[in-house]
Amino acid sequence: MTKHLFSLVCLFMGMTIISEAQDYSSTDISINRYVDGTLLVPESIDNPPLVIIIAGSGPTDRNGNQSFMKNDMLKKLAERLSENGIATFRYDKRVVKQLKTRTFDKNIRFDDFVTDAKSVVTYFKPSYSSITIAGHSQGSLVGLLATEAGVDSFISLAGAGNPIDQIILEQITKTAPFFTEDTKRVLEILKSGKTTTEFPPALASIFSLDIQPFMSNWMQYNPQKRIESLEIPVLIINGTRDLQVSTTEAQLLKDHKTDAEIVIIENMNHLLFEINGDDLVNTKSYNELSYPIMPEVITAMVNFIQKR
Picture (spheres, rainbow, N blue to C red):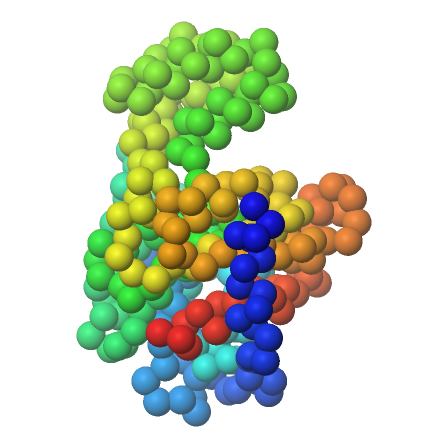
């Protein structure tokens, strides 16, 4: 595995990202009634490539934040890329706008996130000759599905290689093995497209009846099958201190897209931050604004995109 994980290191020898920050413009754009975001465009570069950044799970806004979690990781990522000659568009997940307007849709589905991502691609295609989707965490699978709208390359940032039902089962088996059989039963029901009220109360946070249709929809997609069908260049990035998505998940994606580039970054956590402390320090970083995006992430992304 080591050979696969670090095979790209030699490609970065002698290659550097732009050392001096470039000026860029910032424009807020409403794509449609569901999607609002921010476009950053380097001012000194004609026709720069565009990266569409897709957020991870939960009510995550364009900056990577939630109500009780402020770290600006997506904003920092976008700014660093735009300082290096790449235009970026990042947007609020539709649930963020709904929460702000108190019009939350209980019928929201995973497919709605894919529809939103595709609408962003469609909006920008006439203006940019090169478009890359960069999906973070859950956004990696959303981005994989949204590539159908027609993009030039795809980047998975801390994206899972297993389908969500398998991930849930593994987590339950690891943390509460006495619920393993119940979890298997419920997951099978959800995967068949049905819902159920027969689950242990202790699992209500995972299998609440309100979110079961969303989970059922999410389970229909296998990242491994989706990535192996892509005919565009792929870059997979993960870190060794990721508490949510292990490097084995990244390797699964690589195994099903053998020509993909993969970069595993030492001491990087799920938010693309460098962590030198213990798991408590890692967890606290989710709600701190001081951490920068690791330079290795920007180097890998810039080199990948510029080669296109």
